[in-house]
Each structure stands twice: as structure tokens, then as C-alpha cells.
Length: 230
Image (cartoon, rainbow, N blue to C red; front, side):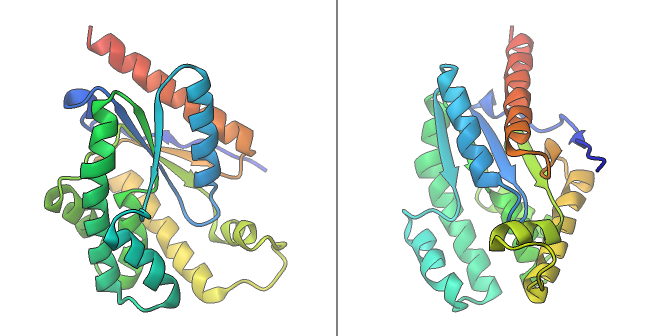
């Protein structure tokens, strides 16, 4: 099977270290893309290299808004607009209480989903375009822009196969499948149309290869930024 790394789209995003010495790298992708596994492995590799690393994920399990999402969302108790509002409030708490302190400490922060996930997922339920949701985060709560947004790209079919642990020949959950198709479409539209610094990786690569690609790009980015700051 032919597989490709789409790679960086642009480098116009502002350097996080302009205000803080740390770096922010975000892992995004549909369900089953492997974000959490990649995030943990990259963090371990970077820690072994001597870097200070912090892993953050959303929704949090600390703020009252994150707890409400985790408690009510799985039961279908939240309307799309309520869920979007809770995600933004939880993210505002996370930025002020977890992200900024870690960046001030000079840590490499790996984020397991961020406001790009809200744009991709909530755009399929609220009727708002993903660009409007990103704007709400960037302007409404001054969400810190990542140094790189890694998009782990995988088809909805393969993602569901991984999530369910079943073979791809089994009957798919059509409602979830259709939504994941739209979520993936939103992510790829961001890469083409948004001004952030995106790096797309084919998530059908073996985990070890994906981890290596992410780690290498993080190291390359930090070295390049260090040269520019001299």
C-alpha cells in the first residue's frame, strides 16, 4: 500500500516561546488515529533525552466544566451548544492553570487534542463552521497557538476498526462512521485553509514509525528555532 507523509503546510504560526520558553505540540486526529499512544511514547522518548515534558489532554478531569463533559456527554445529556460552551470553558481553565505554567517552566508540552478537535468534532453537530469555532478559541479565550499541530490522518473505516477491536469486514456503526468522515474532512480542510503550522502524518504507519516522525519533527523544530534566536 502506498503511504505518504503530507508534511508541513506552513510555518506562519507564531512561536509559542515568544512569550514563554517552553514549546507546545498538539496531537490531533479522529477516533482510532493513535493520538494517546503516540503522545505517551513521544513524551517518554523526549524525557529519556533529558527534556522536561508535560502531557495535557482535553476535556480535563480537573475543572468543573471538564468533569461535567465527562459525566454528561457519554449519556447524551448535553446539547451541541452546551457541549461546545463547556469545552471552551474547560480549555480556558486548562490554559491558565496547566498550560501556561508548564510553558513558563520551559517544558515541552504535548497536548492530546486541543481546540482544533473542538473545531473538527463540534462543527459536525452545532452547525458552526470549524473556522468559527477556532476563532471562538483564539479570540474568545486567547488560546495559545501550538508550535506544530500534528494531524494523525486515518480513514473513518480504519479508525472504527481500531476503536472497536474488530476486523474491518464487520458491520460498521454507520452513524459514528459518517460523523468521523466529516470530522476527518474538517481536519484536512484546516490543513489547507487555516494559518496554523500543521504537519500531517499517515496514521496507518506502524506506531513506532509515527512516534519517530513526530519526535524527529519536534527536535528539528526546536533546533531551528534555537538557531533563529541566536
